Image (cartoon, rainbow, N blue to C red):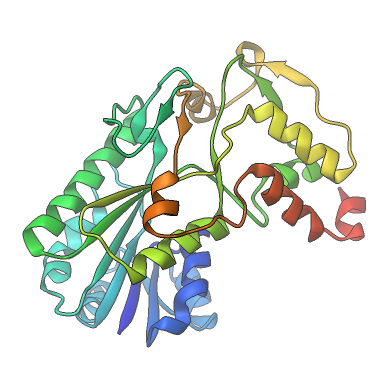
Length: 295
């Protein structure tokens, strides 16, 4: 039985590495032939999507699939995986798990209040509205096909090579202050653990928040990373004065605290990094003296 991963970015790559021993082979897609070749060189099977030749091979992969992970974001025309492969997915005889990676952004702004999976989504940004539409489309596929679809709403992802600590060491970290603003985060290893647990106990139509247990002001997280690195924290910059891309600025339009109690209670997952403190401490332990000196 195969695992087919549509998209092999940061999270999907870690998850595939975590569970590859459970499958006969793992097939993962990339947008370029070069990336697909690197995937194949790592011991997985790389396919290019969209590419019509590889799409036909993916149909065969899906026919032998036990699990499908979707991490490709939707566009203005909807979910590209559903557009090309919904028939093949519905027809797959052994498919027992479909995981769709979404975002906590679908909840919109709650003025710093708590949200959980029972909170009605009210997305603000266009990309979050597209995510919610894709979630609903995947859940409808599950309902009509009888295939167990699970939606995972992820908080801000960090981990090796992608963290506030890395930005502090690179000299690119900013301490942007917007009073009352908090964000949840989630270590990529904890995402992989949640997905792996769900593989063993699928629940059709399930929606899970995957977020740490301490939503925190972003400037506090950067200051903590600087302290771990033995460096002075960057100066605070007021949100209104900060030089930010429109996308980065849009994240600050949503302020909420996300509960992930369901993954702990239903899936039995104990986060390895329940707050940013444990996560950054682990990353700091893996930075050698040479890395610190270069930074």
